Image 1 (cartoon, rainbow, N blue to C red):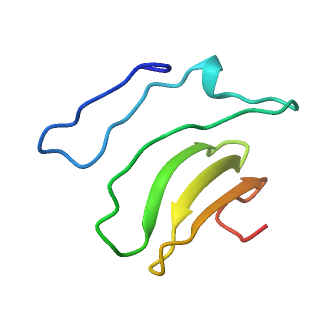
Image 2: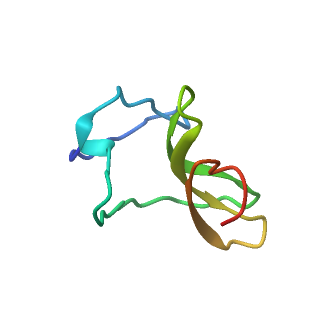
Image 3: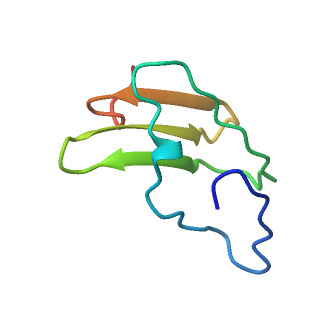
Length: 78
């Protein structure tokens, strides 16, 4: 699924299996997406390793501000 376009139909989310393409390592990386925002806050996309307690995420606030967080605890503002 990495690198392809998807149409969800009536569903509101997808799960993508773990992929090395989603592991940015220590270099720069790009996350590209399109979404139709219906209001409210929520998680847009994330990659999280529960064992390492590390990862990244993109989420949107109730005011429509898109935020990126990365690090050892991506659920804490950075």
